[in-house]
Image (cartoon, rainbow, N blue to C red; front, side, top):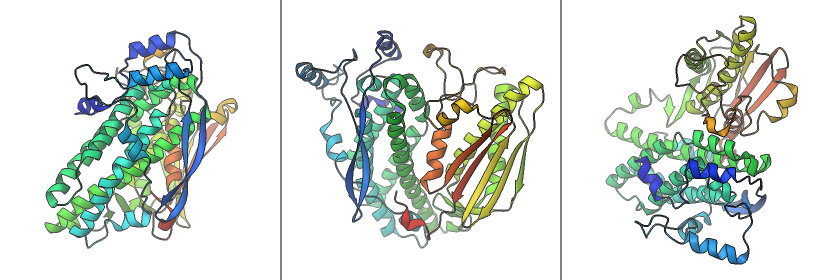
Length: 463
């Protein structure tokens, strides 16, 4: 299934071997990306939208002359697979046409109302038709983001693979007929679920690709691209997951099982109306302990204190991701210190609530963050894990091996520098924040504040 999706994409065919051969030629050109601002009409208002532009580069690292550019584009129009002469070129008119359309954004209030009872067939059909129109537009804009990267970056096999998946999803979404009937909705939900599964684990490839390509464009350009890509990813996943949940809850209503499906109205689609903070912290901490045991053969203890009976309204998968990333950093730092002095103190996790927001502090005694690298901790691809060469093939789940591992398969404790910047994007998506305070030589406090998702703030947020 994944192979079929990737095969549809028209990006140049590359391999790890050809990529490394390209790198070995010693190119050090960095593409100059400029951020421009345009205005997109969204639900009757003008919303600024950043777009990226970049110079065009040939495989030898040079910028093409008009004649060479014409030759390059002529080559692009040739099918990359001689057995499939109908395969489209890298620059697709369909992508350009859909990417030029405006986002039809929805408010968080609309997202919440999607799964409010009573659920009706008309409401379900209306939301399906909205997604049927909107998904190819959003996928096309993501494909354009990749096309605007420096040429040599798009040749990277990891980024190439992700591009193929996005392009395949765009083509499938574009060709899917408008949903009109119950049978159409069943097929539509199947497609949404399948595409979501394919996209679920693309971030390791993104991280690996950008780790390898960081020499080819600056930190600001890389951060701008990745922030925009991840926000697009969050938005479309929210819309898709909420519709799938609405579909299943509507089916449960028809079968008289709505209360069971929603756990007595606890869940409004994918949103948990009573998300118990301490329970989620405990679940994530136990999961990270298991990772540490598998990777290092030991794991630090943890203590949860504060207002441990707090509940709020939020998306469980978002909170789970953020907590896991922060706890991995704290647990790993604790164990690295323990390696030197044969003892470690437990990680302290404090939870609290106030003014429609919840706060979590994760305190470790792992020696803190060195002052010289503190300004870079939210940079993509920045990591304290040492990779000796590109041929080492480190994965986002790999470790530096200093504490040893009893298994060849290493859980995701540390890797390619995406954990903290992605956590920050997730925290800020609904108006929250993430801050780190370090005392070098002693330890680090990570503070995350999150708003309860409710209708009083919902109108301010568009997805």
